[in-house]
Image (cartoon, rainbow, N blue to C red; front, side):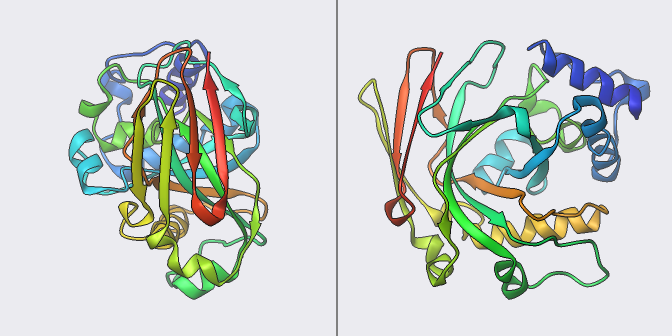
Length: 256
């Protein structure tokens, strides 16, 4: 498993892509995928700043051939602030996703029983808008399969975070949040919180319990980004995107 992790990490570090992991080191189950993923922090040498969820819509799951959502870490050195210019060099996917993000005040550790919605929300410190700029280490990520994609940290790459808003009762209605993204080339794209597993909070609860099931703790201060409210937006160098998340605020990104 260490060999698989090393290969994926060095592929990411160089901005390259591979067809598949070689047969002898290729994971064959979600459990194997998460075991490889757990080795990434030691390879990267960076703190896990937060967690992401891939494939939070049925269409997205069909597109990449997986049975359900996938969880993966996002590392501190790939975080960006509102208005940042983000490179697309070495990025094969070349999309940006508008996402609802939660930051945690306290840790949620693995335990025998699943965490309920109320328990998870009670641990949330703030909610904020985010842009994810994903990528996969696989040339044909839509055919890599869920075990390899999990080992690859669920297409983790870069994340841009907006200003936090203290957690309050409005989190209960995030499924109705309207998001409008405007691209500098004139495209306007619309989405809603319900596009994320029916409700970004439901996606959040899923992530907490998925981590716990695989022995991972969601640490205090970490964030969870819950998936695309607006369909993934294709971008090229020179594009700029500004998104209006309603009461969550606005967010802007440029691509180099």
